[in-house]
Image (cartoon, rainbow, N blue to C red; front, side, top):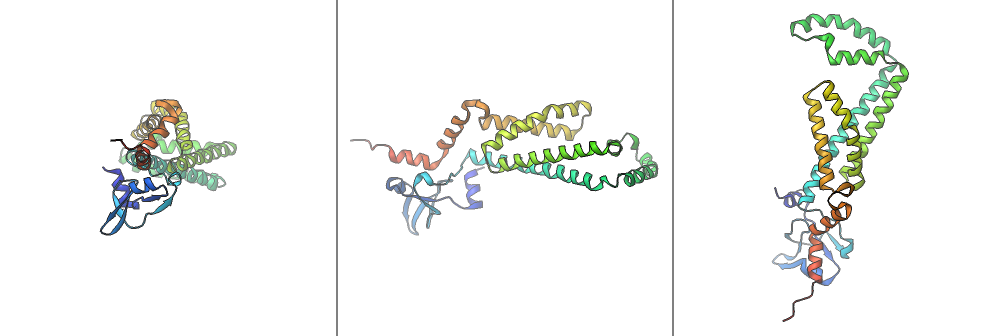
Length: 256
């Protein structure tokens, strides 16, 4: 997939007219339709007025190639984090909403379980060993103080998920560090849950989180890996079309 053309077809070409004469001359050509400016993303010359103009130092950063692919992956991770954060906060709000009616809910729950047993026996479902039923029974047995701590923990974790989502979506370096640290901190708990009770869903979640941590560490050069932040920013600069053209414009002409 050509990530540059994909982005240009979706959001338009990124043309820019720098003030520096030599660099400006390298980024424009005459065409039958008038002046055409080179897209800083896909490299094609686009007829019409440039979308931006000014000093080259003030040109917008235009990710291209692998950086565009990385941005797409980071935003997919951001969506996953935002979904988890929303789910956690919704569950916490449900606990708060029904906390005052716990006695009525417990009475209805214990009254309805016997009615479900004949149906459960017919389909081969051991309702007493069900994870869902045991979880509800445990939750109904929690003290009010314990429920408050659970709600506080869920809200805090949900807020952390939203902070990760914001940093990853905006492609901020602090978001990458936060995602790695926060995700790594919960990996031992996820491993323990799989050892305690194996499910495909738990294994899938663990696999995604491990892959996300490894990918962020390696591709974003976090914590000094592969040269750290300096090497990462240098890699960004090398892939910038404006940087390449600027270097070519400043290169002395060969003498004859």
